[in-house]
Image (cartoon, rainbow, N blue to C red; front, top):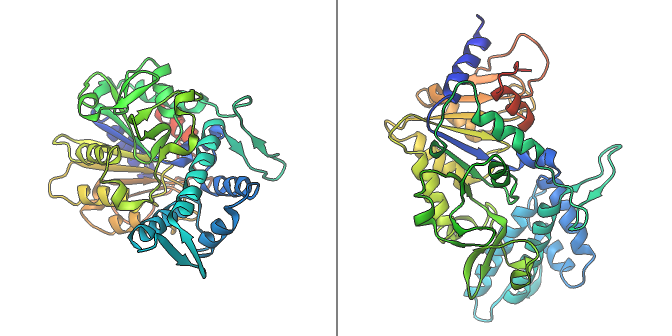
Length: 385
């Protein structure tokens, strides 16, 4: 057996671990017609340009950011500007040579959140070569759940694995509801920290104690969460009149950085993430669609795996441009002799384990397990291709 096949067999054994944690990013929903950051940013800006009042401010915020910024960076920057305006005597902040009042900054932030929520709910596909633009709406939703259902089916029936549902925890930075919807359609009881049904109120202390439920922790919020002045944090059905203002949807990108993660619901969600990475039994953290671009999440992982006697094995599925182009965070961990022994990074070029030296498959073709559908096929026992 060659080195690649040996590592793949070892990887399969770890994926049969009783205690599983899955961390998902935007990449897993792309094939479901939920846009990733670049097309999402373009679409939000196009919608904003069709409105009066905020175009100049948005352009000023963009001009203050690096060239490779996206909409989450814009929201983050607005959050910082709001904080500065709150501390100022006249409740204004000056940048780009213009004074902007706190209320104006908040108005743009809420407008952007409203656009993001609607795009995530109904889907969007940008123009790409022969691909025409597709714009989802309440009357013509584009988002498909097919890929998520196939993944959940594959995970729950993986080999002869008889994993108890309570030993699987999902964490996601995505705002869409595809993951929890797919679990429910597969007859799994889901806990997201809310008590109730289609409408729910925030009750994490009781809900996460349910050992018969699969937990889904949405670390950046959700398109169906609202922060209501009177009723607090609510999970609401789409389209109800009493929570009709989509601008009050509770989503916070990597963003609003450290301060917002100290408040509920995010404080409770990150606390659960931290706890799952510090189980006393062997456990795995598997990532897919996550590019390690969120410093706060990365720091939680880093803190956990660097603790003496921590029993977390990290398994990462992601795409690289070439076999020497690994994310800086992952490269730091691979360069640590002790950490690298419990890290597997499965890329389109091969797999890293134990060192920064990639282990390639004999075939020169790119591997597909870094995609969501490719990962599903891998869990089903399909050939690594």
